[in-house]
Length: 335
Figure 1 (cartoon, rainbow, N blue to C red):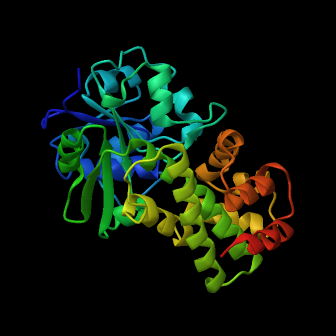
Figure 2: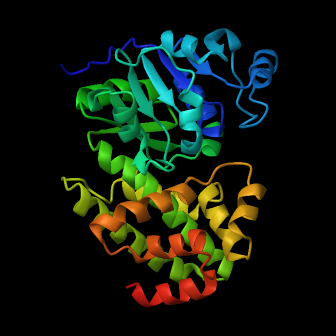
């Protein structure tokens, strides 16, 4: 039996990073109240007292009485109909470990643009396997939308993805605001893998920036990255998706070019000579593309799809290949 989301469904966000904080802000534009799981009790108490997240997007202010905040994951999930996951993919298993509330009656939305490290699966695939959650009860939030610009209420675009177009449209109304436009899609596979791949290509763009390549080359690099993304998704899960839509190409562009892109920043540090470990220590946020690179390399061992950019990033990050030489070799494969 298919799952139907009620327009009055109660929403809760799991996580308290920048994207989670931005999502709570967006939800409260439309919802009277929202649930919020905040694992750190000090952060929770700070928000209650000062009405802002002490670590991320400090210019965003909340009315605590409109938030059902708790450090108890089961309480937050139990009170929600729609559970929105917004934690780094590397920590998802750890965050969900205390969960004893069954998800069989919940609709779970992944706002995580990453891969479960070591499992080589997307978040939707992980939820399906680990929690036997039908894909009818899994959704994706995607699109070119940096949390920093949401905080500033700059016009941004999201895509709500569910197997049911009706569910996607119901959810979309919870995220549509004066500064957030929302489109709907049923391409769960494509939306997730596009979000995974674009992080790898943003690292490539950052590496090239760090090495001193110019805008002309960056344009060629990202054009080839879009073709590479299209090849991967067409060969692994073909459907009538339009790769030029904002959930695919738009997200690729903003992640590759934006000053707010942590993956681009991570790559730029690698291009400038930082080791992978040092770059990770220096950054205060997770670069999802690091884990994504290993996952796509693992998946592509089976498919043998031509992905020279993704392969170059993997060699640099995991095989200690010299960035300058690796990128120089890559330039001969771009058109």
